[in-house]
Length: 389
Image 1: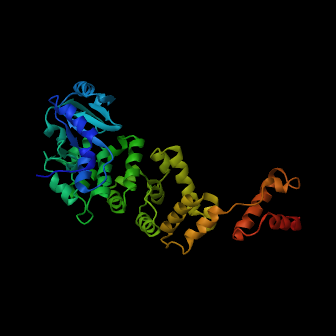
Image 2: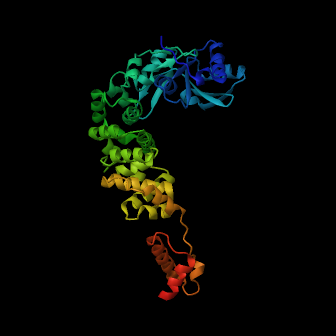
Image 3: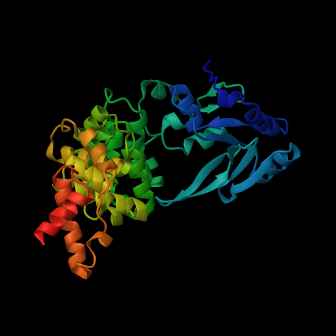
Protein backbone atom coordinates (compact mmCIF):
# COMPACT_ATOMS: atom_id res chain seq x y z
CA UNK A 1 0.00 0.00 0.00
CA UNK A 2 1.41 3.36 -1.06
CA UNK A 3 1.23 6.23 1.40
CA UNK A 4 2.47 9.78 1.44
CA UNK A 5 3.89 11.35 4.59
CA UNK A 6 4.37 15.05 4.08
CA UNK A 7 4.43 17.92 6.53
CA UNK A 8 1.64 19.70 4.68
CA UNK A 9 -0.60 16.62 4.99
CA UNK A 10 -0.10 16.19 8.72
CA UNK A 11 -0.40 19.91 9.47
CA UNK A 12 -3.12 20.36 12.15
CA UNK A 13 -4.95 22.91 10.01
CA UNK A 14 -5.16 20.56 7.03
CA UNK A 15 -6.19 17.65 9.23
CA UNK A 16 -8.90 19.85 10.76
CA UNK A 17 -10.31 20.53 7.29
CA UNK A 18 -10.39 16.81 6.53
CA UNK A 19 -11.99 16.05 9.89
CA UNK A 20 -14.73 18.64 9.31
CA UNK A 21 -15.75 16.83 6.13
CA UNK A 22 -15.28 13.28 7.34
CA UNK A 23 -17.11 13.75 10.65
CA UNK A 24 -20.02 15.06 8.59
CA UNK A 25 -20.10 11.84 6.61
CA UNK A 26 -18.33 13.21 3.50
CA UNK A 27 -15.18 11.97 1.81
CA UNK A 28 -12.05 14.12 1.95
CA UNK A 29 -9.50 13.07 -0.66
CA UNK A 30 -6.37 14.96 -1.60
CA UNK A 31 -6.05 15.03 -5.37
CA UNK A 32 -3.97 16.17 -8.31
CA UNK A 33 -0.80 18.15 -7.95
CA UNK A 34 -0.34 17.79 -4.20
CA UNK A 35 -0.52 13.98 -4.42
CA UNK A 36 1.53 13.79 -7.62
CA UNK A 37 4.26 16.08 -6.33
CA UNK A 38 4.43 14.39 -2.93
CA UNK A 39 4.98 11.02 -4.62
CA UNK A 40 7.65 12.50 -6.90
CA UNK A 41 9.46 14.41 -4.16
CA UNK A 42 8.56 17.74 -5.71
CA UNK A 43 7.52 20.73 -3.52
CA UNK A 44 3.77 21.10 -3.04
CA UNK A 45 2.37 24.61 -3.45
CA UNK A 46 -1.41 24.12 -3.42
CA UNK A 47 -3.62 21.75 -1.47
CA UNK A 48 -6.63 20.47 -3.40
CA UNK A 49 -9.25 18.05 -2.13
CA UNK A 50 -12.15 16.23 -3.72
CA UNK A 51 -15.32 15.23 -1.94
CA UNK A 52 -18.69 13.65 -2.58
CA UNK A 53 -20.39 16.47 -0.68
CA UNK A 54 -21.99 19.24 -2.75
CA UNK A 55 -20.63 22.77 -2.21
CA UNK A 56 -23.47 23.88 0.05
CA UNK A 57 -22.83 20.88 2.30
CA UNK A 58 -19.09 21.61 2.31
CA UNK A 59 -19.78 25.17 3.46
CA UNK A 60 -22.16 24.01 6.19
CA UNK A 61 -19.72 21.41 7.53
CA UNK A 62 -16.84 23.89 7.50
CA UNK A 63 -18.77 26.62 9.28
CA UNK A 64 -19.95 24.15 11.90
CA UNK A 65 -16.29 23.35 12.58
CA UNK A 66 -15.33 27.02 12.77
CA UNK A 67 -13.49 26.97 9.45
CA UNK A 68 -13.82 29.88 7.04
CA UNK A 69 -15.49 28.93 3.75
CA UNK A 70 -15.05 31.08 0.66
CA UNK A 71 -17.15 30.25 -2.47
CA UNK A 72 -14.22 30.90 -4.83
CA UNK A 73 -15.55 28.72 -7.64
CA UNK A 74 -18.89 27.53 -6.45
CA UNK A 75 -20.32 27.47 -9.98
CA UNK A 76 -17.73 24.80 -10.74
CA UNK A 77 -18.20 23.00 -7.44
CA UNK A 78 -15.22 24.55 -5.64
CA UNK A 79 -15.13 26.04 -2.16
CA UNK A 80 -11.94 27.25 -0.50
CA UNK A 81 -11.67 26.35 3.17
CA UNK A 82 -9.21 28.51 5.08
CA UNK A 83 -7.80 27.26 8.37
CA UNK A 84 -4.96 29.04 10.19
CA UNK A 85 -4.26 31.01 7.02
CA UNK A 86 -3.85 27.89 4.86
CA UNK A 87 -6.24 27.68 1.87
CA UNK A 88 -7.63 24.30 0.84
CA UNK A 89 -9.59 24.11 -2.42
CA UNK A 90 -12.36 21.56 -2.01
CA UNK A 91 -14.19 20.48 -5.18
CA UNK A 92 -17.16 18.16 -5.42
CA UNK A 93 -16.70 15.01 -7.52
CA UNK A 94 -17.75 15.79 -11.09
CA UNK A 95 -18.43 14.06 -14.35
CA UNK A 96 -18.54 15.62 -17.80
CA UNK A 97 -21.91 15.85 -19.52
CA UNK A 98 -20.88 17.89 -22.57
CA UNK A 99 -17.69 19.52 -23.84
CA UNK A 100 -16.86 21.90 -26.70
CA UNK A 101 -13.07 21.91 -26.59
CA UNK A 102 -12.84 24.95 -24.34
CA UNK A 103 -15.16 24.29 -21.41
CA UNK A 104 -17.27 21.46 -20.12
CA UNK A 105 -20.78 21.11 -18.80
CA UNK A 106 -20.45 18.99 -15.67
CA UNK A 107 -22.68 17.32 -13.14
CA UNK A 108 -21.86 16.42 -9.57
CA UNK A 109 -20.99 12.83 -8.85
CA UNK A 110 -20.66 10.63 -5.80
CA UNK A 111 -18.04 8.34 -7.33
CA UNK A 112 -14.33 9.02 -7.30
CA UNK A 113 -13.93 6.88 -10.44
CA UNK A 114 -16.08 9.31 -12.43
CA UNK A 115 -14.15 12.27 -11.05
CA UNK A 116 -10.86 10.65 -12.02
CA UNK A 117 -12.05 9.81 -15.54
CA UNK A 118 -12.61 13.48 -16.42
CA UNK A 119 -9.02 14.48 -15.63
CA UNK A 120 -6.27 14.84 -18.22
CA UNK A 121 -3.29 12.60 -17.39
CA UNK A 122 -3.04 9.40 -15.40
CA UNK A 123 -0.48 10.94 -13.03
CA UNK A 124 -3.05 13.62 -12.14
CA UNK A 125 -5.79 11.09 -11.31
CA UNK A 126 -4.26 9.98 -8.02
CA UNK A 127 -5.97 10.60 -4.69
CA UNK A 128 -4.96 10.25 -1.06
CA UNK A 129 -6.99 9.87 2.11
CA UNK A 130 -6.35 12.06 5.12
CA UNK A 131 -3.99 9.39 6.54
CA UNK A 132 -1.90 9.53 3.34
CA UNK A 133 -3.13 6.27 1.80
CA UNK A 134 -2.99 6.63 -1.97
CA UNK A 135 -6.00 5.70 -4.12
CA UNK A 136 -5.37 4.92 -7.77
CA UNK A 137 -8.76 4.44 -9.47
CA UNK A 138 -7.36 4.47 -13.04
CA UNK A 139 -4.01 2.77 -12.61
CA UNK A 140 -1.88 5.89 -12.95
CA UNK A 141 0.67 5.04 -10.26
CA UNK A 142 2.94 3.00 -12.57
CA UNK A 143 2.98 5.91 -15.05
CA UNK A 144 3.94 8.35 -12.32
CA UNK A 145 6.72 6.10 -11.04
CA UNK A 146 8.09 5.79 -14.58
CA UNK A 147 7.61 9.55 -15.14
CA UNK A 148 5.45 8.69 -18.12
CA UNK A 149 2.99 11.42 -19.16
CA UNK A 150 -0.03 9.63 -20.59
CA UNK A 151 -3.54 10.78 -21.34
CA UNK A 152 -6.41 9.05 -19.58
CA UNK A 153 -8.19 6.78 -22.03
CA UNK A 154 -7.93 7.83 -25.66
CA UNK A 155 -5.69 10.84 -26.14
CA UNK A 156 -7.85 12.31 -28.91
CA UNK A 157 -10.96 12.19 -26.73
CA UNK A 158 -9.23 13.98 -23.87
CA UNK A 159 -7.86 16.65 -26.21
CA UNK A 160 -11.21 17.35 -27.83
CA UNK A 161 -12.69 17.89 -24.37
CA UNK A 162 -10.25 20.77 -23.86
CA UNK A 163 -7.76 21.64 -26.58
CA UNK A 164 -5.46 23.28 -24.03
CA UNK A 165 -4.55 19.75 -22.99
CA UNK A 166 -2.33 19.53 -26.08
CA UNK A 167 -0.13 22.25 -24.62
CA UNK A 168 -0.46 20.88 -21.10
CA UNK A 169 0.93 17.59 -22.38
CA UNK A 170 4.21 19.26 -23.37
CA UNK A 171 4.33 21.27 -20.13
CA UNK A 172 3.85 18.19 -17.98
CA UNK A 173 6.47 16.28 -19.92
CA UNK A 174 8.94 19.14 -19.45
CA UNK A 175 8.32 19.27 -15.70
CA UNK A 176 7.61 15.65 -14.80
CA UNK A 177 8.35 13.41 -17.77
CA UNK A 178 11.32 11.17 -18.43
CA UNK A 179 13.27 12.19 -21.53
CA UNK A 180 14.78 8.71 -21.80
CA UNK A 181 11.30 7.25 -22.29
CA UNK A 182 10.54 9.75 -25.01
CA UNK A 183 7.06 10.96 -25.86
CA UNK A 184 3.92 8.87 -26.09
CA UNK A 185 3.34 8.26 -29.85
CA UNK A 186 -0.43 8.15 -29.37
CA UNK A 187 -0.36 11.54 -27.63
CA UNK A 188 1.77 13.16 -30.34
CA UNK A 189 -0.44 11.76 -33.10
CA UNK A 190 -3.60 12.98 -31.38
CA UNK A 191 -2.11 16.45 -30.87
CA UNK A 192 -1.13 16.64 -34.54
CA UNK A 193 -4.64 15.56 -35.56
CA UNK A 194 -6.30 18.27 -33.48
CA UNK A 195 -4.20 21.36 -34.22
CA UNK A 196 -7.18 23.38 -35.44
CA UNK A 197 -8.67 23.24 -31.97
CA UNK A 198 -5.82 25.33 -30.60
CA UNK A 199 -7.17 28.34 -32.49
CA UNK A 200 -10.36 28.17 -30.41
CA UNK A 201 -8.49 28.86 -27.20
CA UNK A 202 -8.08 32.33 -25.75
CA UNK A 203 -4.68 33.86 -26.31
CA UNK A 204 -4.32 34.41 -22.56
CA UNK A 205 -4.72 30.69 -21.84
CA UNK A 206 -2.25 29.77 -24.57
CA UNK A 207 0.28 32.37 -23.42
CA UNK A 208 0.05 31.31 -19.80
CA UNK A 209 0.48 27.65 -20.66
CA UNK A 210 3.45 28.31 -22.94
CA UNK A 211 5.23 30.43 -20.33
CA UNK A 212 4.74 27.72 -17.70
CA UNK A 213 6.21 25.19 -20.12
CA UNK A 214 9.20 27.42 -20.86
CA UNK A 215 9.87 27.92 -17.14
CA UNK A 216 10.66 24.21 -16.71
CA UNK A 217 14.29 23.33 -15.91
CA UNK A 218 14.87 22.15 -19.50
CA UNK A 219 11.92 22.63 -21.85
CA UNK A 220 13.95 22.14 -25.05
CA UNK A 221 13.00 18.46 -25.70
CA UNK A 222 9.31 19.18 -25.09
CA UNK A 223 9.36 22.25 -27.33
CA UNK A 224 11.11 20.26 -30.05
CA UNK A 225 8.37 17.63 -29.85
CA UNK A 226 5.81 20.41 -29.87
CA UNK A 227 7.34 21.75 -33.08
CA UNK A 228 7.34 18.29 -34.67
CA UNK A 229 3.58 17.98 -34.19
CA UNK A 230 2.92 21.44 -35.64
CA UNK A 231 1.60 22.77 -32.34
CA UNK A 232 4.42 25.30 -31.87
CA UNK A 233 3.82 26.94 -35.24
CA UNK A 234 0.08 26.92 -34.58
CA UNK A 235 0.26 28.90 -31.35
CA UNK A 236 3.37 30.96 -32.16
CA UNK A 237 3.69 31.52 -35.92
CA UNK A 238 7.27 31.92 -37.09
CA UNK A 239 8.78 30.45 -33.93
CA UNK A 240 12.17 28.76 -34.22
CA UNK A 241 13.38 26.66 -31.28
CA UNK A 242 16.98 26.16 -32.45
CA UNK A 243 18.35 28.65 -29.92
CA UNK A 244 16.42 27.21 -26.97
CA UNK A 245 18.76 24.33 -26.08
CA UNK A 246 21.87 26.56 -26.31
CA UNK A 247 20.14 29.11 -24.09
CA UNK A 248 19.30 26.48 -21.46
CA UNK A 249 22.92 25.32 -21.56
CA UNK A 250 24.23 28.87 -21.10
CA UNK A 251 21.84 29.45 -18.21
CA UNK A 252 23.26 26.40 -16.50
CA UNK A 253 26.84 27.54 -17.10
CA UNK A 254 26.17 30.98 -15.64
CA UNK A 255 23.94 29.85 -12.78
CA UNK A 256 21.00 31.82 -14.18
CA UNK A 257 17.53 30.74 -13.09
CA UNK A 258 15.04 29.68 -15.78
CA UNK A 259 12.76 32.41 -17.06
CA UNK A 260 9.81 31.91 -19.37
CA UNK A 261 9.98 35.33 -21.03
CA UNK A 262 13.73 35.02 -21.75
CA UNK A 263 13.15 31.64 -23.36
CA UNK A 264 10.16 32.95 -25.28
CA UNK A 265 12.45 35.63 -26.68
CA UNK A 266 14.77 32.87 -27.90
CA UNK A 267 11.90 31.29 -29.85
CA UNK A 268 11.12 34.45 -31.77
CA UNK A 269 7.79 34.31 -33.53
CA UNK A 270 5.69 36.91 -35.26
CA UNK A 271 4.54 39.50 -32.74
CA UNK A 272 4.74 37.00 -29.88
CA UNK A 273 3.51 39.51 -27.29
CA UNK A 274 0.28 40.11 -29.21
CA UNK A 275 -0.13 36.53 -30.33
CA UNK A 276 0.03 35.31 -26.73
CA UNK A 277 -1.47 38.46 -25.21
CA UNK A 278 1.28 38.94 -22.69
CA UNK A 279 0.97 41.49 -19.94
CA UNK A 280 2.31 44.97 -20.68
CA UNK A 281 5.27 44.35 -18.42
CA UNK A 282 6.08 41.02 -20.08
CA UNK A 283 5.74 42.53 -23.55
CA UNK A 284 8.02 45.44 -22.64
CA UNK A 285 10.67 43.12 -21.19
CA UNK A 286 10.46 40.84 -24.24
CA UNK A 287 10.87 43.67 -26.74
CA UNK A 288 13.70 45.33 -24.83
CA UNK A 289 15.56 42.05 -24.42
CA UNK A 290 15.33 41.19 -28.11
CA UNK A 291 16.41 44.67 -29.18
CA UNK A 292 19.43 44.66 -26.87
CA UNK A 293 20.40 41.11 -27.87
CA UNK A 294 20.28 42.01 -31.54
CA UNK A 295 22.48 45.09 -30.99
CA UNK A 296 26.21 45.51 -30.57
CA UNK A 297 26.52 46.88 -27.04
CA UNK A 298 29.37 45.38 -25.04
CA UNK A 299 28.59 43.52 -21.81
CA UNK A 300 29.69 46.58 -19.84
CA UNK A 301 27.42 48.90 -21.80
CA UNK A 302 24.54 46.43 -21.45
CA UNK A 303 25.08 46.54 -17.71
CA UNK A 304 25.09 50.33 -17.73
CA UNK A 305 22.05 50.70 -19.98
CA UNK A 306 19.92 47.86 -18.63
CA UNK A 307 21.31 47.00 -15.18
CA UNK A 308 22.55 43.57 -14.25
CA UNK A 309 19.57 41.20 -14.60
CA UNK A 310 18.30 42.60 -17.90
CA UNK A 311 21.85 42.87 -19.28
CA UNK A 312 22.53 39.22 -18.48
CA UNK A 313 19.27 38.23 -20.17
CA UNK A 314 20.16 40.13 -23.33
CA UNK A 315 23.69 38.71 -23.48
CA UNK A 316 22.47 35.16 -22.87
CA UNK A 317 19.97 35.57 -25.68
CA UNK A 318 22.61 37.01 -28.03
CA UNK A 319 24.99 34.11 -27.35
CA UNK A 320 22.21 31.55 -27.84
CA UNK A 321 21.08 33.10 -31.12
CA UNK A 322 24.64 33.13 -32.47
CA UNK A 323 25.60 29.81 -30.86
CA UNK A 324 28.54 31.48 -29.14
CA UNK A 325 29.99 30.77 -25.67
CA UNK A 326 29.51 33.09 -22.74
CA UNK A 327 32.20 35.79 -23.05
CA UNK A 328 35.05 35.51 -20.58
CA UNK A 329 34.75 38.14 -17.87
CA UNK A 330 31.23 39.12 -18.95
CA UNK A 331 29.78 38.94 -15.44
CA UNK A 332 32.37 41.36 -14.12
CA UNK A 333 31.90 43.70 -17.08
CA UNK A 334 28.14 43.73 -16.61
CA UNK A 335 28.49 44.44 -12.90
CA UNK A 336 31.00 47.21 -13.56
CA UNK A 337 28.67 48.81 -16.09
CA UNK A 338 25.67 48.52 -13.79
CA UNK A 339 27.57 50.29 -11.01
CA UNK A 340 28.85 53.11 -13.24
CA UNK A 341 27.23 56.54 -12.97
CA UNK A 342 27.66 59.09 -15.73
CA UNK A 343 29.12 62.15 -14.00
CA UNK A 344 27.78 64.82 -16.36
CA UNK A 345 24.25 66.23 -16.27
CA UNK A 346 22.41 68.49 -18.66
CA UNK A 347 22.87 71.37 -16.26
CA UNK A 348 26.65 71.05 -16.63
CA UNK A 349 26.39 71.85 -20.37
CA UNK A 350 24.08 74.83 -20.06
CA UNK A 351 23.86 77.53 -21.26
CA UNK A 352 26.35 76.69 -24.01
CA UNK A 353 23.92 74.02 -25.24
CA UNK A 354 20.15 73.92 -25.13
CA UNK A 355 17.26 72.15 -26.76
CA UNK A 356 18.09 69.35 -29.22
CA UNK A 357 21.74 70.37 -29.28
CA UNK A 358 21.93 69.84 -25.52
CA UNK A 359 20.56 66.33 -25.76
CA UNK A 360 22.84 65.46 -28.66
CA UNK A 361 25.94 66.74 -26.90
CA UNK A 362 25.07 64.97 -23.66
CA UNK A 363 24.67 61.70 -25.58
CA UNK A 364 27.99 62.22 -27.35
CA UNK A 365 29.81 62.71 -24.06
CA UNK A 366 28.08 59.70 -22.53
CA UNK A 367 29.01 57.47 -25.48
CA UNK A 368 32.61 58.66 -25.29
CA UNK A 369 32.67 57.95 -21.56
CA UNK A 370 31.26 54.45 -22.07
CA UNK A 371 33.75 53.72 -24.87
CA UNK A 372 36.58 54.72 -22.53
CA UNK A 373 35.49 52.07 -20.05
CA UNK A 374 33.69 54.62 -17.84
CA UNK A 375 36.97 56.49 -17.34
CA UNK A 376 37.10 60.19 -16.64
CA UNK A 377 35.31 62.30 -14.08
CA UNK A 378 33.11 65.32 -14.71
CA UNK A 379 36.04 67.74 -14.88
CA UNK A 380 37.89 65.66 -17.46
CA UNK A 381 34.83 65.23 -19.63
CA UNK A 382 33.88 68.90 -19.46
CA UNK A 383 37.47 69.91 -20.05
CA UNK A 384 37.47 67.87 -23.22
CA UNK A 385 34.15 69.40 -24.13
CA UNK A 386 35.51 72.90 -23.61
CA UNK A 387 38.58 72.07 -25.70
CA UNK A 388 36.35 70.74 -28.41
CA UNK A 389 34.35 73.92 -28.27
